[in-house]
Length: 100
Image: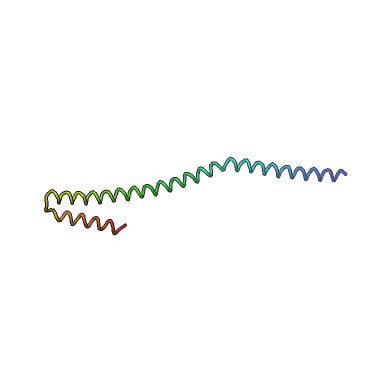
């Protein structure tokens, strides 16, 4: 009976060790999960900010081109003769619209 008791205690010790390691792993995963989620969230926000910056740069370029065209039209309307500036503004606008 002594051999069976030792074997039974050994099996219980092994099972207890497995349960302890499994519980420790579960606790560790619960601790690390918020960090992992936060890291993914920060990465996603960085991607969104980069995309938004690109859109804002496009809007700035569009506003510069449109401002130049409006200025050329205004100058032509006031002076009545500056056709060269209108042609340059048209070329810039055409180049901008075709490159998009």
